[in-house]
Length: 465
Image 1: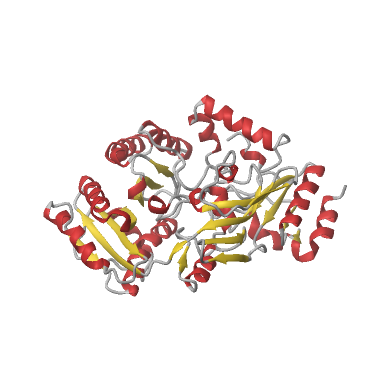
Image 2: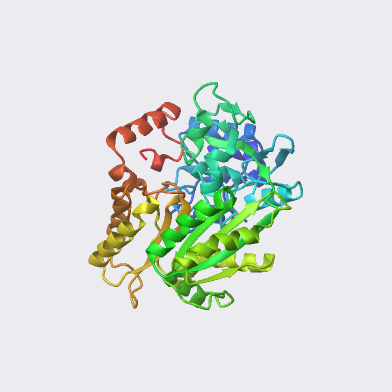
């Protein structure tokens, strides 16, 4: 069979791309570390077309890699072998239904997260998934990576927000599990298997999502903390005093803040007092008669009395709130502009922060003295983005990249954490997964993957993870 001819006939010129100039945007990952030119890029417009693409690829022995917005940081959505068809869901971008009574939405996998937010704003509803890439990230990719974001500790990961889904399985069959129900114990929770599977069990084409009332009132503040322990105590106090009104609790160190301020000219620091650590937190409610600012100020008062905070800024307008959030969201851009970097998305119990950070720094200095460390992340759920830059004056890590990364991942596991918090495994952590997962865990995952895809053509280079 001629796979290119068959896919061109099925999808037409707009749906089947083979020219290098057309496939180039789909070929490399966001960090430009992974990706080889595929046979072509399929751009179906509905589930039936996706199923036919998968069947044709199976018959031809061609690998299939699904791709969303391409904002992932572990290289999971690009080809690593040339005998591959990339399936882009970008043209499947319809918001099919919004039910205001049951607080659900049915969307295609290619819907961009920011577009869903905009549509829901007009209906006084919200989908509580928020991350820096939401202007490009697609629902299907968020499901495939089981995305987290800044509100995960309050509303859960993507798997907690997906009620049902439609999936094209590796043999081309279609599983339609689109029940829009919170309670459904009619069997195994199959939808959970596809959340975080990175396309290895099938291609998600549609999803039923759980919605919430729109957050009508917000109160946002940034706090400067004199030490790591003070930051942890502040976070603990805010969680206790603010309860379910607390929807975001972020942290970052002064080094990464200074780096972002250096590289992004129009980014500003609203603080009068410098500190080793900062917290950005937000209260929100759908009750428009509830003034959150007195609650926020009352929550901060004992923090200052205890000496855990030395300065704070409270947003007094939407523009000021956006400016505070921009600081947090531009931190990755600051490290990117610094040059070569190693990104690590790990999580440890919050109580293990001091021991993990101290021991990780010691390991890194031993491997490559002078390596610069930048930390930020989600304080409430223990998710740390632990990024490295080479020593000043060096353009790379002197061939210690793998050793540095493994030291961080292994140390996270040693402290009761994980080497993959919200970004997934992808290609970048495939070998690490094989090294750090328990044998029983690896075997169980392998059996599930082999049962769903015996010939291992769905994202095959990750099939062992």
